[in-house]
Image 1 (cartoon, rainbow, N blue to C red):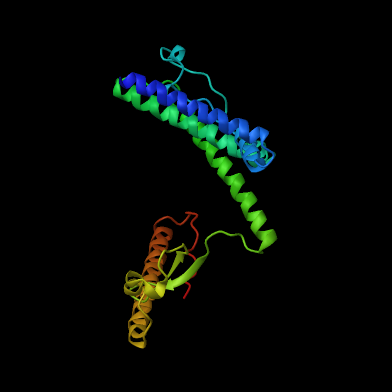
Image 2: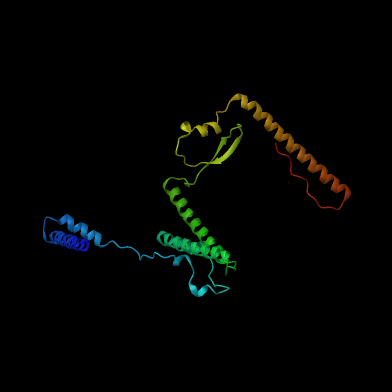
Length: 239
């Protein structure tokens, strides 16, 4: 009984779909439907591969003790390629790296030696060079459009102790004036802190002076014991 109703429903749906398609191509008022059908007809996808075979090497290479491979991509070779080619090459290298890391893990699990482990280093070097080329192009584009490199800036700020430190700017989800953690780690500078900051700076200067004097005494002792020694004087102390 269930099979009878299923087959009947399928026939009804097929007849409805056929009627819709015929009306879409024969009725002059259904221009919008025809355009949508024509647009959908050009859509395609790659071949589906539900297995995990691409994460492993060819089975012919499983018994090899050494696998011959090429050299990594050079910067000069990558600079002459288009952005589309670099985008494709990035995913090729990413796929190769995932495969090599999978095989390396599998060989370790089986307590065997991974053949030609330098392949992973070559892929990493190629990916690093590719990112360098992309950074060069982004920097050139930003300099042309805005006059800036577009990279995060290095700014001078004060930490929770009031000391000057350099940090790299980055994006935040919460503005600084609404971020309680940022307010706690970067309190406003006050004159009371300035007193202790000056004392701390004086302590650092004294430490540098002691280290410089100690180095001078060491060099003088060496020259006294070994008159023919060729040793340079320590650099002048900078305040």
